[in-house]
Length: 234
Image 1 (cartoon, rainbow, N blue to C red):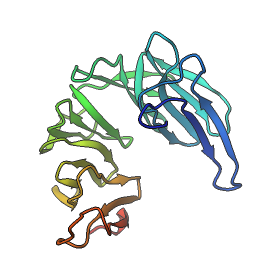
Image 2 (spheres, rainbow, N blue to C red):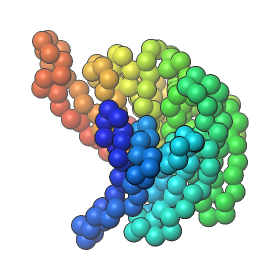
Image 3 (cartoon, helix red, strand yellow):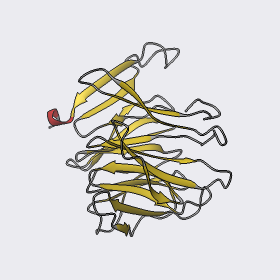
Image 4 (cartoon, rainbow, N blue to C red):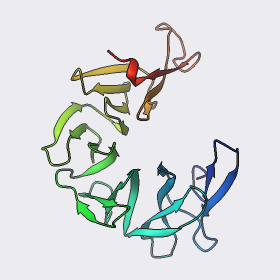
């Protein structure tokens, strides 16, 4: 999507073996604008949500990374995150600050299960077995692991956003910088003090930016990108 309007979005796939780029989907000329189109991919399947009609209703779409098997997998839903075979999304999304209903769907069988526990969500992240989310007021972060357990509050603060998760870490950004919760050590670790920056993680890696000079006049000059292998953590 093109900021700040998020208009005229196009989704591509890149084949890392042969370098081929494919166009998978694009905003229709009749309704080009969807706020923040984001994609999730697992096992060569891509999912995303978008508004493609004047009714303003989000749908969740799926397509293979080679362009085949385009379909709608959920109507009146948004924000899908796919860890094969389950995709989690916000079912019947309401206005900001309203209670959210998260559901997960088996991409192989079509089975849909509502997820009990999360309410009033602004951001959520899913790793295949666990769910992390930030409250609607962006002041608290929770972890539900496994799905049938009770949610546990990990941290409270201000302006929490952009949560991510893997089997070892839960990450987010806030007004004081980028933080992670270590699920093994059961402690919160601050990665940087850069406002509006946040960690990004996959199953195996954690990436973030930080300022190595505590006396820098501009905290954003001279920042360093740090990447680490989660398997190297103690």
